[in-house]
Amino acid sequence: MSAHGHVDLGHTVAGWTGTTLALLGFAGAGAAVCAAWTPGIWIGLGVVAVAGIVTWLLHLAGWGKPSGPRPEAGWDWRQRDAGARTGHADCLGCRAGGPRRAVAAASRPRSAASLPVADSGA
Image (cartoon, rainbow, N blue to C red):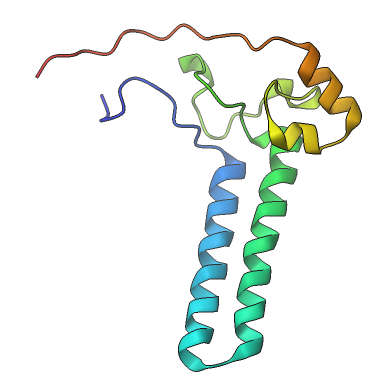
């Protein structure tokens, strides 16, 4: 059992890809600051912006997961989310994906997954 209990922390292809791109962009911008290379700073910050867009597009394509608890069968980070086409309830990314997706996500109530109770032993 992890320090966070028996829950899924949302590791997804979208999350890992976006985090890796953002890390590379920040590292590149930081190296450019050290080298006093102004175009490199802007290139690094551009990569960070691209990381956000790529993460959002992968989420809309089904490689992200909705927020909140999920059943243990859906914890694998390589598993696509079948409900992504219609949008996730309370998801800013899905609402930004267009009016049809936002309406579909708002009309569906979010289901709560039942999770086992974590051990409180020492």
